Image (cartoon, rainbow, N blue to C red; front, side, top):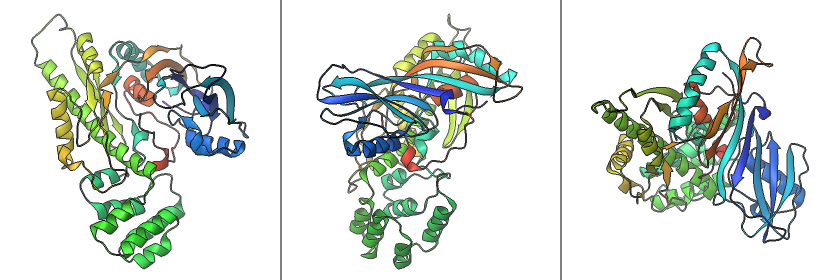
Length: 421
């Protein structure tokens, strides 16, 4: 099974709650793009329009390997234009509010699954009514973890553990799929000469890196380490912390689901005894994703109503079973909530926010199987559905197919992670 073979195979349309009028403080546009991530598309529009990119606001990052439609806004006295055919702007009106996650309610999707075998299409047909009735676990998907190394190392986790030197070294030497051969060799050279700051300084390419090493040249005390770490751009540090929180949240959900399924299997027979709970796992970048099957409708509804908070020193209130799962997930990493103060890190304030344990797709449906015009001897199928903001269409596909979603080779690093919901 394949997805995103062509951008038009993966169509995303933003849903926003925003009143538009003929006049207002902000000018709003519908931006349609293909082959661009949102940040790069906004930079292109800013250049073509002579407008600082910081004035162009949007609600979330959308994939470059898709055909996406999302809203952007700019102060009303400004006007936007695009200079490239792959980015199209359509005036939508004016509003007294700018585009942000506050007005984003969700997204609709139109996705073509390609290269399907008979067994795969049969399983999807079986799973469609199950997922449509019970929903699916609301994990963060692999694209959230662009700043986590292939070995599962996270800068955010190192900082939470107080490993300041280790965090700096990881920042300067970690290799990601988006790095070319020369960049990987440069980072290996930095790793090999770490501690010889004169040599490392000569290998630096950005002012941020040079400033970091300059701080270390003044000594390895805590003050200089914090100065070096605080030189990392705020948005980049925030992305690393978000990845760490998401890793812990995913594990918390997995442990909570295990608790729920274990309790259910020990329950005496009821009117829902025909439901024999089961689960299956799908491999991911940072571990497996566990999916449930055959839950009673009432229990599935309870899961969708259960809110699991992301970790922070001050965790939001949650049920005892959820709190136990969060504590266990942190404990597996040698951490506790008290460790998450991150004192001295300028962008180190971790905010705890709720995320539902499971979500229900809206209007989930599938078209008829058809011969795949791009994969001889295989079939294709079109899925239609909507999801609330912050939920992943690729996770729904994993829930439907029972396997990881084979994708075109992705080349990304920390900069292409999704922003916090």
